[in-house]
Length: 309
Image (tube, rainbow, N blue to C red; front, side):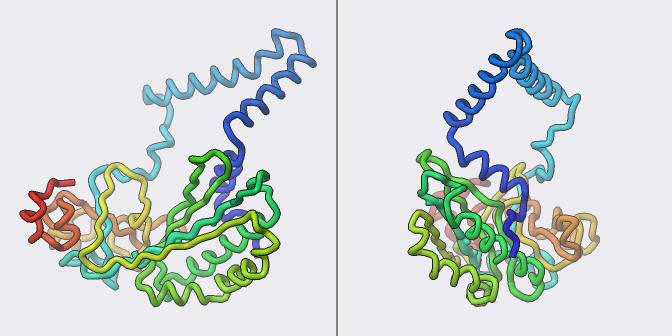
C-alpha cells in the first residue's frame, strides 16, 4: 500500500492549506528576519523584492499573450453537457434514459456517485495534516481507487473528481472526492471490494485511537429525468470528467449523422486509451435547456418557461 498521494498537486494543495494565511505570513516574516540578521540590509530585502517583481512581470506577460496562460490548459471552450452515454460510447438519441449515481467521499482531519458517492475526511486535531493517523487514512483512501480505475471496463466506475478542499471555518481542512458509477449495484460492489474493505476495517479498528479524525460519505441515486448538467468554458469536472468505453472523436463521421452528437465527444486523457468523455455541444435543441436535458420538455409551461441555461 502506497503511503503517498496519488496526485502530487493534491498533496501540495492540502499541505498549502494545512496552514492558515497568518501562519504562512509569520513563516515568511521569520525567514526575512533571518536574512536581515545575516546579510547587509540592501541585500536582505532583495529576495522578497525580486520574487514579487518576478511574479508581477510573469502575470503581465501572460495577460498580454507573450507567455502561455497555464490556467487555460484543458479548458473546453463553449457550452457543453455530459449525458450518460450508450454502452458503445455513443451519444444517446433520447436524453435521461439512465439513473445517475453519485458517491461523495470526505476525509476531515477533524475524508464519494450519478450513481454517485461523496467521500470525505477531516482532522480536527490542531496538527491538521500531521495528526496521528492522517498519513494512513490518506494512503487507504488513495488505494481504494487505484484498482477501481484499472478495472473500470468491468466494475461500472465512471470517474471521480479531483480532491476538493473546504477551509471556511479556518480551523481544519476537509477534503472531498465525488465518484460516479453506472448503478447502485456497482457502487455496492466497490464498497465490499478488498481495497475498500481494507480501509474500512482500518477505520473500524482505529476510530477509538484517532478520535480527532472524521469521515463521512453520502450516496445519491438520481432517477432518469431528475438530473442534468451544463458546463461552459470549463476544465472537465464532475460528470464531465467521467470516462466511457468508446473511440469516437469529434471528427467521426458517425457523429455527424444525428443532431444529438454533432459536436464533441472528447477523447480521454492519454493514460486512458479506448475511452471518451461524454461532453457534447449543448447548443442544439436536444440539449439546449435544463428541462430538455432532463428529458422533461413538457414541464416548460408549468415552470413559466425554460431559459437556455
